[in-house]
Image 1 (cartoon, rainbow, N blue to C red):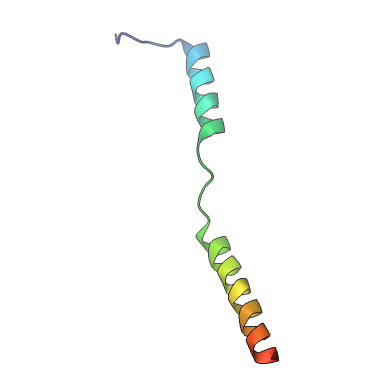
Image 2: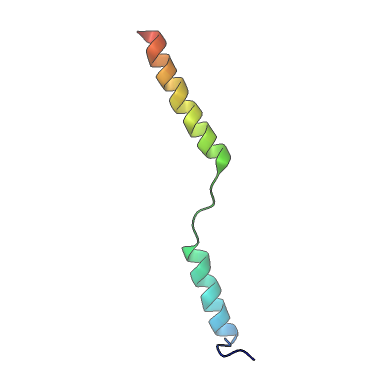
Length: 49
């Protein structure tokens, strides 16, 4: 037995805390799409001059 054993209620509280506080999952596809849209907008402005 460890020094800091949690009962099921405590384990649930810890799991809920970590679920709420974990950083958002980095979405590579969404990031690439955002960069692509910015590039196209910038490119369109340059060719429009």
